[in-house]
Length: 390
Ligand SMILES: *Cc1c(COP(=O)(O)O)cnc(C)c1O
Image (cartoon, protein in one colour):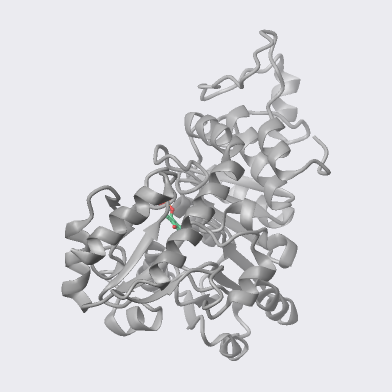
């Protein structure tokens, strides 16, 4: 399909070829292998002289469709789909890094990604240096001759800070290194990092891509040659996405834009409500004028995203009181669901992160991360208001 179509149309109309049954909705290809007509076809296929599916650890019609769709949405040349977001992150690192390499990462990254950097990288003699979201001027001084890439998420988790993608990419280009962005919080509907110069973009498809809290998935898209390296690594190591999950996720992408619009509208309304509430110490949302990187968010994002962070009065006690009084919203660590979720990062997702790192990435005792769902905004606000005032 032509690249000139609009985002929503690409999401709905990108489909695998119709079979002899003329189905309207894509079938589920639950098959581990594929058959060949003769010895020559088998040889040519394995020699990659012929492009076709061989084995579902390598590719499958359902995963191919999901990958093609995300590539069109992100403006990427190629991609590979994984069983989870962490499988995408780990396999991308595994394919690109060697012993002795160095990585520069934002300190505000997903907890498990941070765990890879601190627990497993040292074992393979890969070093990592961190920069603070508020201190991007420091990035250049961290780059070494062995630095392979800059890694970052924007908006960040859970502090919803915004990093300037154009700035990161100009630093990476100047030093001849790669820029890898985890675009999970924004989704390709709100932000396309490749447009701003990123080489690779990673997603946990488990979050807003599925958007309904059902299946796990991940994907890395971007530069063809780099994806080829990631594909070869993944062919051998087996972190592939299941055809079933790819089928679910490809369907989910058809509704991403309408869902994201509502998630974002609800998030902005909640953020504005919280800003005026006396029991709330501070609120962070990229499209609030009070957000420290509001101008950058406006430059690179279509809307502000589905996550709002705020701090309730009273520290740990205040936080616990708030969570214990929530009636409708879900207390969970997940995000990007139809249901509104409230999380306490200090005691859950970031409980294992050292105290000083926690503070540096903006996680305070009474901080709440709210992932806005698709319920009516009046009901969401009513629940959060009564919990604040209880
Ligand atoms: C959830 C998440 C991941 C990990 O994805 P899984 O699908 O849970 O493995 C990575 N990055 C970000 C920003 C996430 O929110």
